[in-house]
Image 1 (cartoon, rainbow, N blue to C red):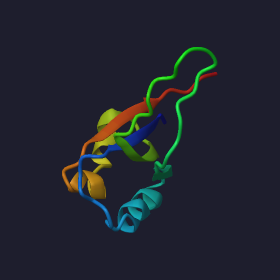
Image 2: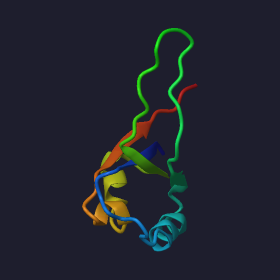
Image 3: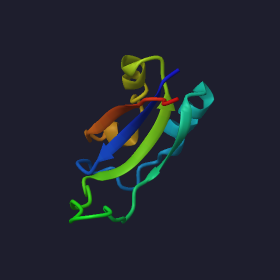
Image 4: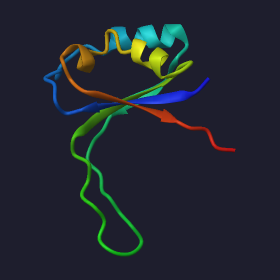
Amino acid sequence: MPDYIFLMHDDADDNGADWEPYLAKLKESGHFEGGSAIGAGACVRKTGVAPPLSTHLTGYVRVTADNIEHAKSMLSGNPHFEAGGTVEIRELPRTS
């Protein structure tokens, strides 16, 4: 079963939202693989100038799903999504 990551953008006012019911639902379904808010950081590279940090990402949730449509269906109840915010869904391909 593929892994997907939900990347929350900074375009919703969901501060103080209660994430526990949503995360509990994902955990109970067996699809939750982790998640967190995203804090300060840095872009680095060995040579040259690194690009600026992506400041529009505020958090992520990692899930397993049958396909991208199944992953989309897991957004129901996501506090950021429900507040009208953008959630970017990306597949995390497995490498051998």
